[in-house]
Length: 143
Image (cartoon, rainbow, N blue to C red; front, side, top):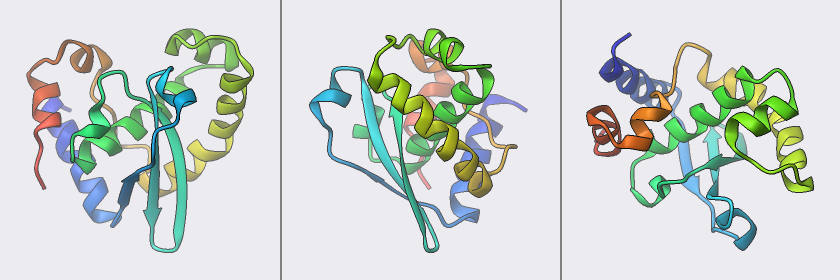
């Protein structure tokens, strides 16, 4: 799948599942770790998930970008074999907060995957970090 097809798949997932996303207020604890909380609602189901947002992408009014952050958080959790690997891969400190977040992910990620499925993928993180053309396309995507 090409990178632009990845963005189109995220957009289809958003539209086809009638997903509603809302950025929750930032807290000092989340802010200091470059984290944000996104509320995801589908039909009568509503949950929120904390995502890594180093580049303040939630400030861009773009639900496809926000869904990408959720997918990226799910993939990061799914790719790690345990808490230690997840924490190291994500660059998080070993604190009670991140232990709790990991435990939350064990419950949330499977529920989110029931909604969005496993076929939809995130844009590779190096594109996001270096703001390559595909990252720019994702950040500027309009429904």
